[in-house]
Length: 288
Image (tube, rainbow, N blue to C red; front, side, top):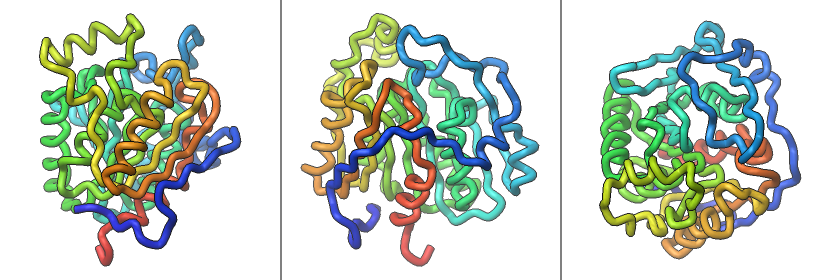
């Protein structure tokens, strides 16, 4: 099932002035520093000093009407809104991240809070921190998505990939029938471009000698797509990754919006909670 693309121009490239995304409500929620077991985010630029992470306190989410359901057995968490709109948003994290990474940085957390406020249920999973679009990680994501849909009676699925998570995002968007739209922050779209030594062990472990042709580059279907990426990103080069996904999506007939941002990998200019909510709302099943 694919979201309708009528009513707006297709294949738009939207340049974006640098700005820092910081919803006042997100600031109020980000009050607890540190989370046991969190690792450095893939959005930390090379040679930068990692900032202390801040985590939304579950009690604060409950006060806002939502709740966090953490399942250690499947290494996944679900953010359940006060009133569901029937949509499921799946966060596919970057290299070295965990399910809690969605709530551990101000930028991602502001998006999570906004989509939860809009009535979307949110799913995030660890994927062992090394889900380079390999078949095993895709199977795990499919199983978690189907289980979460059944548990919470959700119909529409939306994908939200970050960096490495772009590889799984594009494949799941092309193959899962309930996916209505997908967003991607500075996505990896061609594994051949990821040459930094720090990535190699997890890439080898994920693919275990199998051909990487399915992600060299990744195939992209006709699912409506919104992408953020910066020409100044030196970790995931936009010209050989985000631009490749955008071109593939256009060739498949998808409605595509490509937002050119600024700064290094993970720069705050990539995160626009209101735009994500509008995009997903636009592609919900009519009348649902």
